[in-house]
Image 1 (cartoon, rainbow, N blue to C red):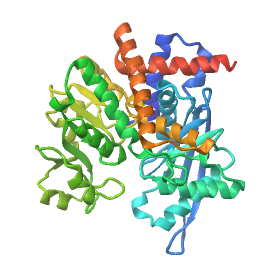
Image 2 (image 1 turned 120 degrees about the vertical axis):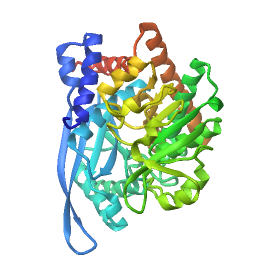
Image 3 (image 1 turned 60 degrees about the vertical axis):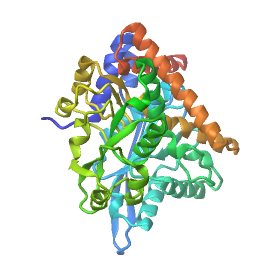
Image 4 (image 1 turned 135 degrees about the vertical axis):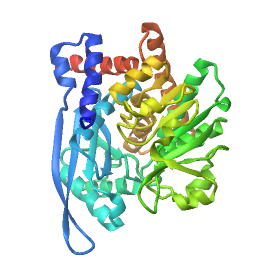
Length: 426
């Protein structure tokens, strides 16, 4: 089997909808490729006195609708094609929820599990030193992503402000509360996933309290999705994530439901659950891929790319009604075709997980005007944005008899293509 390339998947998804929209050749050339890319080395003085060199990236896909926006992830399997794909998906994500931003993404090939806090700080500052002339509140705004946190963002902000000799809190989002961060930002992505699940269940005339779910991942997105879904009356019976002692992934299952109050105390800040302590709490330990085999109504992939593929989709039980993509790019094109044929209601990633970038936009607005909203105000605005976006996509899907992913792409790509045309680029 050939190696999965997320950028080829993103381009194939675009090509399909470009054909549906009959986009001009020049527009297709512009939007199926990235606008700018930066590849660079980051030398870091390690605690043992030696210097290690890490590979870093920043990609801007398109900024016709506004400054670039996208996270910076630290991951040992990071590749430039992953970053390219995520940047493109960010363009569509911002467009589908109709916020005035474009798409960007950054990354560093590293494993922060193996780096001390001081080494991580030097890495963050080194990334900013490489990119300080090319990012900023009016051009390209970074944010946290996989295995990066509010602390990482604050180190980056401090380095950026040191270089430029002024205060620029709108340069980066995902900052700590009290240092320019927005209330509600931590919850935003996970809550956004559940807001659109709620709307889908309404249209199916199903009560949340009559449903069960299985979640892949136990990081920020998964934790807050589980929290809100449980508050709505739903029951999560399984989560899949890494454990702490032996760095392997497992699914932790509990028929009476996953209890966040039990699991959070035995979870590190990377979302890794301690398997031995989980077993003591009565959780059944299963292989990592078992999350997708559960007999539930809702599947929420909230980890990495390529997790629902041609092989794993065969394990999905007939009971599953909704797949809500909390992660970016978790479903391959081949699996998508099977999902569509089986009639499973798909809420695509760049709609389902757009709560994070939407709240990042709110944070950017607040930082730029130096005035901060109350938490209920932030989450209320987020709910309105996510609900409006879902309704627009769902209505188009019904009207044109489109798969939900295709309907979301039609709306997003049309908005970006129109912006490029109106600017005179194509």
